[in-house]
Image (tube, rainbow over all chains, first blue to last red; front, side, top):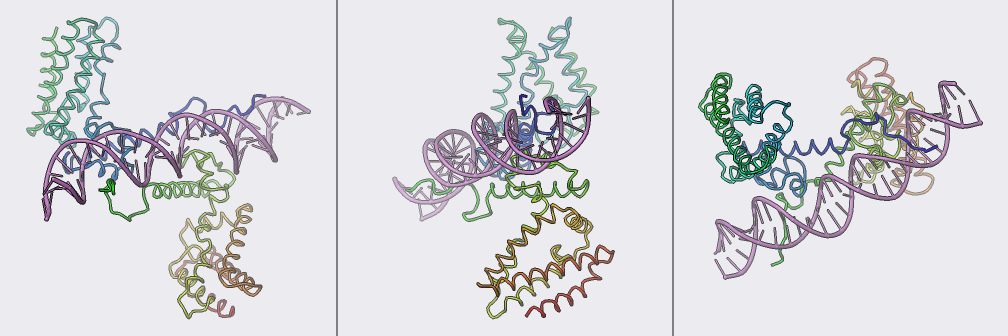
Length: 209
Length: 209
DNA sequence: GGTACCTGGTTGCATTTTTAACCCGGTAAC
DNA sequence: GTTACCGGGTTAAAAATGCAACCAGGTACC
């Protein structure tokens, strides 16, 4: 008879399951609480105890989700980690790697993705300022970029040429994002900046080939 | 030096602690989800799986909080368990037990406590109907009342006289509550019924001495 | 009269979380 | 200069939870 084939009301191969859902929600709660507190009081004036209390979890739990205090801020970048490498690997046949990356960056521009620096949502702007004016954060951000660079290099091939290209691509993206962010920080709107951001990107990526 | 005397930001002897707070909230979430589903679809047309899903917990967890399906409804009565006994034990010196219970019931009337039957909130009314028209619920409710009766008897003293008085007091409270509920079910408002509820209670408790 | 399924309720085990410690470096008091 | 506190980060044990099974009783199908 092979009893007990199923239980638990639902379908067979369904949603991520209760455990996974709660984990994700907890992670979001911690990250959101942290960023919101940091924006309000500054990175150094908020202790991890404060964050744990605001997110209603214990301190060890906090550190099980985020290895360091810095990562509480940088997870928003970390979530995009390896994206460039993925774009190269998953590009449609016949498209060059640089072209694929160009297209992807352009798409980010169009949807005002914060990583392109072209978002004028007040929270995003404040968030960028927080990151780039807090030394320990900017420092740790570099580490993420290095890892990202290595992943991209591996996706591009082997040898020095791949490594060189990867470094250049990411450098270009950083410069573009920083330029966009600067213009927004000067008070212009994303809509206004968008055209020149696109031509800047086009020029930069073209020069990369 | 006796190191590590304290940690964890807050005060020393403080709020109930994270664990206890979350437990209470989970319990509330389960109970509220259950009652709300029962009111909407009826006791028999909602499975414990549905409730667990709505409360976002697993079935074993549900049964760790509530021993049976019926208790998902009756916890609202169970939370008041032993209240009569407590009132008698904690009464101010010089006040007779019946007088203390009388005063307590009167206070419940004044604040429209649902257990007095004098609440006209639609949800409370529907809840009462749910309980009294579902046999298995009414049955289990009796069990609670018996336990309550024994606790009250113990608080009143020993022997048959205490036991008799306890039974009579609780019987009186049930009759009063049911009478109030009936009037509300007929469409009258709690404010309107309140005066006669008070005089009914006064008469009943006076006759008890 | 088997078969398959549903419901209330339970069980063993793996995972997650809380708790209360602790470590180490800094810093302010005295 | 040592005492005390605070900050980031870790640890071990105990509690809570999720998961996947299971059981017993009912019901409907064929």
